[in-house]
Image (cartoon, rainbow, N blue to C red):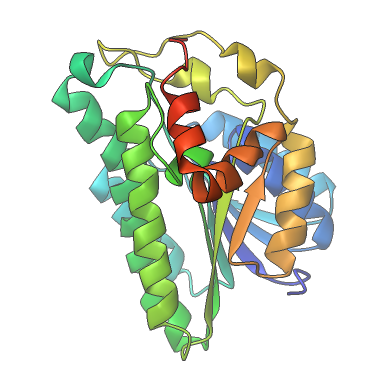
Length: 264
């Protein structure tokens, strides 16, 4: 896919991978719709994108608030813009044992990572079909491919996204709607610092493993290259990605390794 001249909506654009992808795509002379909760941060990203030669529209909303998501979608659709692509990067994690995770944390993780994401997708999809097709991309996780300690709700929500978007893809081949599932491993973002503890509050601690992870700039370049090819799955990360073939071909080894992960 040639990005030039396309209208691309990016969520989670105020920080992390979403921000890096926005900045990289802005070099392609596109029209960007940037969304996230932090409007000031979005404005800063938008200014940088405009300096790269792209036009920008800022649409802040809260991914965990159904009405907020619906209102944002309504605003964009009523503007008359043809959405060529919707790339979703917003999300929230946690670091808690199953036995210590209160249900409200599970619900919050699902509201943001799963329901908020599919609400926006469902709002945009009919118009995308009407316009002859488009490209949807959703960010899951390495632990969206298998369960992993201290991330039960996060892993479950990300696995749910795989099921949803693979179903959507199969249903819409005839409608020319392409679907890419981005699968990040250890990328140097603030996701671990923002992840919730057992009280449902941000931990404000960065995982040591993430400090050694791939930079968001390198991840963004790889993601955009694969989005341009409309790849169905886009794994991106470092040596930790070896867990994908280990889980698939050597499940006993995977179970052995997973059971020995130490609390962060």
